[in-house]
Amino acid sequence: MKTLTIDNSKVWTVEDYLLLGEMSTPCQLIDGDLIMSPAPTPNHQRISRRIFNFLSKFAQELDEVFYAPIDLYIDKKNVLQPDLLFISKENKDIITHRGIEGVPDLIVEIISPSNIFTDRNKKKKIYQQIGVKEFWIVDPANKTLEIYSKSQTDLDTPSLFLVGEGEVRSAVLPELSFNLQDIF
Image (cartoon, rainbow, N blue to C red):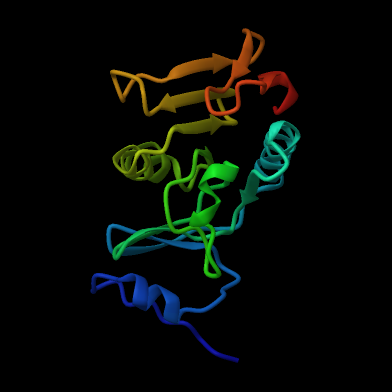
C-alpha cells in the first residue's frame, strides 16, 4: 500500500498535481497550494443531486452537466473541482481527455463547513477573473443561493435567493426555474 506525503512547503504546479494520479481524497490546486477536503456529507450530496437534476432537465441535447470530482484547469497553479458545472454545446471544445480546460458557462459550489472561506473567497475570485458567465454559491446551513453574473456591475453583490421567497432563475439557462425548497 502506498502512502502519500504532501509537501506543503513548496508551490505546487499542474505538473505536480497530475503526478498524484486518481485519488480517493478530493483535492484541488489553488494558487499553488494543494488543498485537500473531506468527502461531502450526505446532505451536501442530496443537494448536489437535486441541482444536477434541474440543470440536466433544462440543458439542451448537446449541452453537458458534470458533477465533482472533475478537474477544471485554470492555469499552471490552479486546478479546481467545482461541485457542478454546465457547459453549453457552443463551448464543448473545452472538454478534454483530462478534464475541463477552459471557462464553463455555469459553476455551482455548495458550501460545507470545511470549504466556506475557499469557496466564498479564493474560488469566487478565480471564477470571476476567468469570466465564468454565472457562478452559484449554495449555502445549506442558511438555505440560500447566491448568483454571481459576469455581466453584473458590482461583482461582490449577488442576486440572493432565500427558501420560501421566489424562484431561482438563471441567465445561462433561461428556461430553468425552481424553488429553493426543492433543493433543500
